[in-house]
Image 1 (cartoon, rainbow, N blue to C red):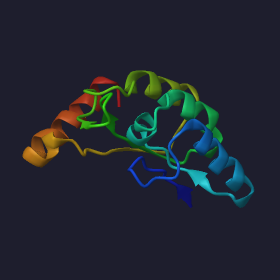
Image 2: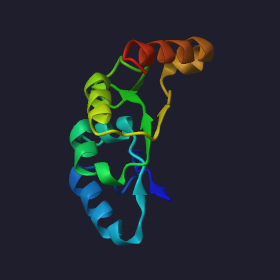
Image 3: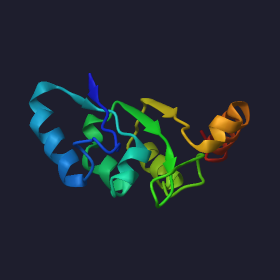
Image 4: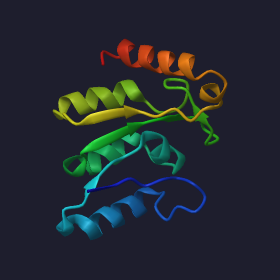
Length: 127
């Protein structure tokens, strides 16, 4: 089982302090961590720093991009530093799932093109 915090207006877990508190309080339970890059960034955190602090608990990763105003963007079009994140995950021998999530307006207009563009972006990063 893994916790997957969200950044929607009713979320109780947004900041680095709140992530740290939640994961510290659940450590003994065996609860793992399913971070989401977009939600982490929307909460004002540096994505790689959050991953670094909780690496031993990460079992599944959701990749989603967002701009500086908190609006969802296609992969690579927002503020999430995916090249830096993926390089760090390689260096730490992460072998779990990476899931691309698309919630931008582009996907609502043209789902097939949005998915193809995201796949192309991942491939450009060696995935």
